[in-house]
Amino acid sequence: MTSEDREARALLALSERLTDRRRFLLRGLQIGGAVALGGPLLAACGSSSDSTASSGSSSKDFGELTLRLSWIKNVEFAGSYIADSKGYYTDEGFSKATLIGGGPSATPMETDVVTKKALVAISAPDITGAAITKGATLKTIGAQYQKNPFCIMSMAKTPITEPKDMYGKKIGVQASNESVWAAFVKAAKLDESKITKVPVQFDPLPLTQGTVDGWFSFVTNEPNALRLKGFTVETMLLADAGYPLVSETYIVRQDTIDKQRDLLKAFLRAEIKGWKASIADPGLGAKLAAETYGKGLGLTTKEQTLESKDQNSLLQSADTKKNGLFTVTDKLIEENITTLKVGGLDITADKLFDLSLLEEVYKEDPSLI
Image (cartoon, rainbow, N blue to C red):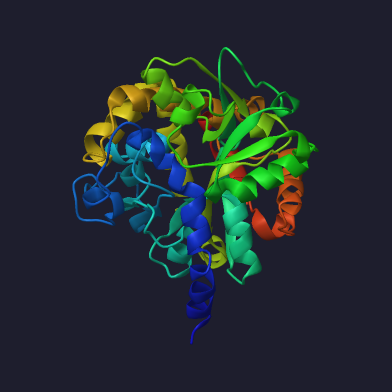
């Protein structure tokens, strides 16, 4: 058995955890209706929405780019859709780009990178860190979201704006998010005995009916689903309330960093250009998600645009405006390592992060900042 086989086998044990963590991202599509999970949901390649076939103008020839997405092809990956559709990948020397969708039945992103099904994957520090402690030779080379999107959603008439506002109230928490909830309560130094945690499913209807006072959610997802239905809601980001953790992180194999730095820098440049375009025009990636890459998933451009606008606040910070998209400051890295430790994952920054590629990209072309 090769080392890659051993790593892949160990990582398969993380599949259930990955599925649980990400599953509720889909709920905004399912509230009040159903959505088919077949077809393009798990498509790896072969459809017109999966790749760009034209050759780029770059003198480099990196071959095909395979990027594994962390979830279904919704607006969460707007920057990559733009980079693909506008030819930024091919301009950087890739013959084409294949965007591999994820979903409830997909293998873990880390497994796809270890087994070389994907060159790069989008993941999160807790999942990648767990994989590394199991022997995977992976590194995080950048972070799209400077803040994780977990939040507590409440109705505007009875808002929860800080952690202690939850005292004496009922908070709906899905079983799959128990571990994040527990880590947040500990990180925020809350007295859990003063909060009534209510087991719930994913449709936030109980919140609108007053059955619970707060709802565990993604800030880009369920809140917008309710707003489109005419409800006024408030959100409290966990990242602003004692649970700092970056998200939508780029992960690669260590040997790719060692042997193919130019390729990875080309990829990062294309992603930077794509995400800058998405930030400038939130509707651009939303339209691509609804009508092209996520066609058939029941997405609407209107709802995806709302998500895209909210996503911009996670992508940007004072530090990224100064240092460039996807960069993570030493202070934020330290906070992430502390947060992971609170959640039971003991890993050092040098084992999890390598941001040297981004440093080189911005040093070589400051105009990308």
